[in-house]
Length: 533
Image 1 (cartoon, rainbow, N blue to C red):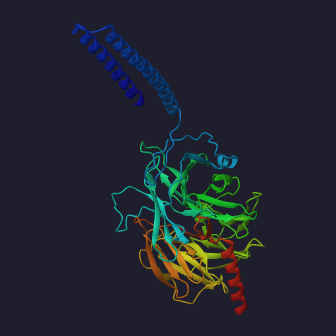
Image 2: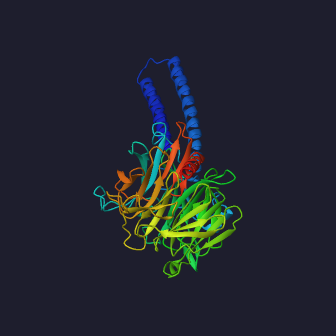
Image 3: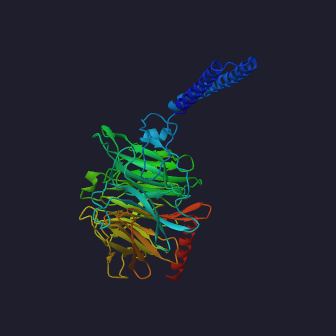
């Protein structure tokens, strides 16, 4: 376009000079007393204008050549897309090596689908909200605020942990293809810089649906990367949907994020990312490492050396005997210790902060199992106090084990919590169980401990409702129902503290306390409680 305009200006200049020359000659021919000096003056003026014209032509040709070269450069350069939430139109990328790949990402079938510029202005204020809560949000048609004719959406929202006001949300309805399932989890990197959320997409041309993971810049709420899971499984290629995400700092001081794929009793693979190195895969956990791999509720232990991976399958879930297990996987060596006898369908996993014990929920048998981590054996079993438990959490002094009654494997619309006395390892009689959460609670799934012990709350996610439910652990009552900003449901959650300069710290998530400060505070309270017994 700029080249065309330059040519137009050139034509106008040439035409103007020609008209001037014709006019001068016409005047001269119509006048009988024109002298030679008059003709010489006109000729000098014409020569000067001709020189200007030649210079303009040369300049125009130079500019035209520069524009042509620039256009060629643009035509041969991939466009840079600055992604804004809800306006995602990236180029389709193939599964060829991208420079992001590692040997482990290739082995575990995690591919870079698209990459974006996630820089930009702050989407919310860390200085004004130094402690916040993240939870996923997705399509939920039973909410009165949700338009049933609206397309599926996926995302997460941010809540101030003290005022309980929603302060921001990330929402997407379409990236490369339309969203066709809502997310089942949001995770945060240990430094609070990245959010991880997944969903399923289905091509409009009728292609197979596939699972994606968005890595989101928390400060700008823009996507940085879009990853696709696809790997070989039992005779063919399979693309799983992302389910749970947890983070921790390993025993060497490295920040790690584990993204867990799949649903039901045959999950996997899982991928451990380095959030400080372009979120590249440092280790894949596949069926070569743990087989058969059960429900994707994989939890790092407080030492940072191990991750606990459920062992299960459809036939194990339906078996009459308690033959499911847990693989205690050493992240560095890849070796695992198999802990047997944790029911039929192990789901929720959490650990005492001294590293001595691990508690595992059996979602179908409605039991909780206690593992001695030194012996790597089950040393206790008790009723979960609720039907179809899913998530699990400990209180501040680890005397209470809270189970989340989702109704897993049954009605799947549970709305209650149960509580086990950890000192006796039996359901507590401190209140009339189960605890009814109220509000829109339905298919509740995770409970996350608030990182301020003076607040003393559990925040419960709500997969079939549109609120996060807050439970006071002093009174054993629900006190708040925090509505989602887009009328969607929730699944999982994480508390993160921030400084005004945006340096952050993951405090706790559905696996339990994660910051060193919170772990130390729990250990202190455990010691105080033990001294009083």
